[in-house]
Image (cartoon, rainbow over all chains, first blue to last red; front, top):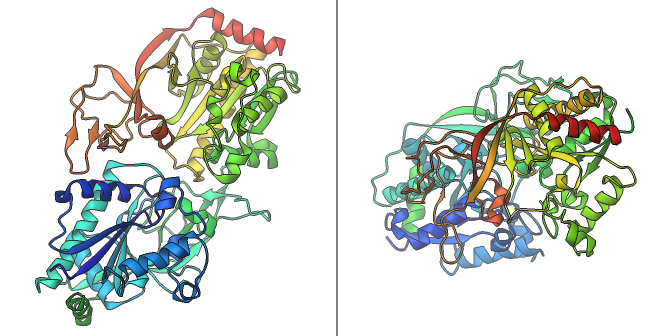
Amino acid sequence: MSSCGVLVVAGTHGNEVNAPWLLQQWQANPDLIDAAGLAVQKVIGNPEALRRRCRYVDRDLNRCFLPEQLEQGASGLEFQRAGELLRLHGPSGEQPCAVAIDLHSTTAAMGNSLVVYGRRPADLALAALVQGALGLPIYLHEADAQQTGFLVESWPCGLVIEVGPVPQGLLNAGVVEQTRLGLESCLRALYQVRQELARLPDALVVHRHLGSRDLPKAENGEPQALVHPELQGRDWQNIASTQAMFRAADGTDRCEAWVGGEIPVFVNEAAYAEKSIAFSLTRREVWPVEPNWLLALKQLLAAA
Amino acid sequence: MSSCGVLVVAGTHGNEVNAPWLLQQWQANPDLIDAAGLAVQKVIGNPEALRRRCRYVDRDLNRCFLPEQLEQGASGLEFQRAGELLRLHGPSGEQPCAVAIDLHSTTAAMGNSLVVYGRRPADLALAALVQGALGLPIYLHEADAQQTGFLVESWPCGLVIEVGPVPQGLLNAGVVEQTRLGLESCLRALYQVRQELARLPDALVVHRHLGSRDLPKAENGEPQALVHPELQGRDWQNIASTQAMFRAADGTDRCEAWVGGEIPVFVNEAAYAEKSIAFSLTRREVWPVEPNWLLALKQLLAAA
């Protein structure tokens, strides 16, 4: 089994401190997470940002995995680190990994959840297995030209485990445990695929990205109203079409129309303010699981 | 009434962004908060830290109001700013203020609360009036040699409004509204004292500081366990003596004895990790209100 390289990344954002602490504890106590015999490479994504307890130094590392820029030797600490991670642990790296699991946390009430980028069959197989085991909701991020260069997209298979709500820079025992469960479930699923033991559920429930909304802003860029208190914390929930999105300081509501069936995620994530995102909107879809998904993941793990 | 200077400070910590936004909105809309005819000076405590969205640049500004160090011209951005605030708005400053209201937020579940430093009669009068009006709990911080130099201590009367839980750097409509209510209640109380309309309640309920506890740490300083999930969010609550304080990554509890009647506050405040504080312990006490409290506040406002 040891040839199946799985990369586990914590601290891709330096102020998301729970997963780095979990990895450190795992290092000290190998029984903490059952690696199911897989060859796991554990790395801190952005050690310098973690040291400074900030999201990034020059640029968001999780938007730096852009093949063209990396080939051209784009400058800055995070582009350098992205290139280094690929040289060390990329699919053709020194310690090659076929799968990347990237551990994140959020100030939004996302619970324990998965983020999948696009519709690669192997990603969907892994997500379906974890959803089948733990029931985690899945945010399918795709068709968003303003947000590209995610880490896991540079590995043949990969997904993000996203846990919240937790403030940036704050250790929280519950968030650590959710992260541990999510990671262990991923590793167990990969083991089962490798051992021909995996059985996918019949359907995959995804929340497909539709777009994002920003706060109402004044001409100088300052927010004129904030996420409505009745919307705060309601990630993954159906929202009544009459629900106001925003509230001003004087208590007046800013009503913008909800389209029926739109479900918010990443509601009031602190790091997205600079990206002009107050929350994203998704549509819940139930997809029949396709036979080629598991096949793709099997082939990947066999070749690794 | 205009001679009664009241200093309202937001952004003493640059990553506590809700009060600065409230002050900005108040500036644009004077009806947002009823100043009750008082001459209010609104300032951003640490503008450079707010710009950087960090707690402080060189040193915690809210530990820099140390008369001896300020007289000796202690260096660093925050000591400079402390001196500047006193020159501008101190009791003998260019625009003298008798009272300082310092607006903070916390990642701990403190709700809407007041922090009072020591037992100055005028502070206790103001706190009693606000508690009588809104019912806010009060953390009485005293006899803590490791934590000194708080801003409000440099004004003849002053208290902190502390609202949470909210992550650092994140705007939250509910937190803004709680801050607005707390501030307006303070201003109304000062107006009532000035107009001889104030009636203090019979008793003041305080949570008196007893001490602080840190996470269990390894020799290298890394936490070996975190605040227990069943303790998280239980600020101001009675805790059963059997409740474990901490939980390790493997799910085992670290039991340390609670002393009966000890009540935690500032449970898992992100900024206190560097101060080696996981939470503080208090004792709830009911104090009869003394006549000299209101007298002291009256004299202060009459002289202002």
